[in-house]
Amino acid sequence: MLKIIFVIISLFFLSGCADKEENKTKELIILGSVHFPTSGINSDSIYFAIKKVKPEVILMERDSVSFDSAFNRKVEYEENEDQAVTRFLEDNPNTILRPIEFEGRNSYRTKAGLYPQANDVYQKLNELSRSSKFTPEESLIWSKFANYWVQLDSLSSTNLKALNNDKTDVIMDSAKYYQYTKMKNIVNDREEFNEQILDSKGDSISLVDYFNKWEQFEHYDRNDAMVSNIIRTIEHLPNKRIMLIVGYHHRYYIKEALERKAPHIKLIEFYE
Image (cartoon, one colour):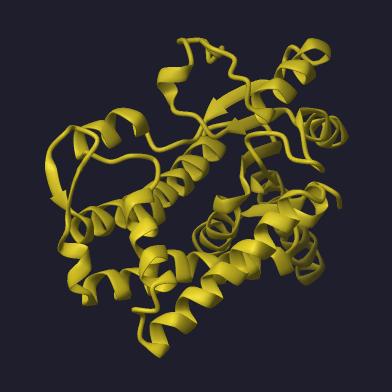
């Protein structure tokens, strides 16, 4: 009899633990997007994706300076995501918005002398390619980088489903490896990148030093900050159904990092 009672108590205890574990699980639907309209993606397609998900919370690629103390947006930008969120909030005003971008991204760039892109470096790389000054290995790297970018441009003109799948994540991962790591190898090895340019503060800096600083921020610091902000925000919200809308160039990195660092967050594709 005592054994039976013990088994019953144990079953209730285990059931309670399971319920608690279930309650801890949060769903995160990740939508990789493009900021400005293409032939296949615009604010309408992003709005319909949000409408299909019906999130309780939307995490946006913004930092907190874009919001007031009640997390209302101070400015509504013309970007696809902002316009889609505005439209969704008209019928769903209780939806919670939260920022997950690198805090103070724009001011940080200014203080660091960085532009959003490294155009001068890539122009120099293109010049070297066109004048056949690359080594055979460098030419192959440049060619692969260009091919990946053509694929991504094509996908961004298709539809949201084309951007949000494992196959595209693999392509993006490879493209970013060539954009950052492989290009950095070329930049660090060639004398041409000792050429001086003016950074965003108007200070003189070599192309190689600029690229290394830019690559560290855009590839690692910014993405890692977004991952940390996503985890912290989700853990402090009681809501279960949460949607992240982020530029699809960040999606692959964020997904991989969340799977590794936050297995308690269940990742879901928006079209599932």
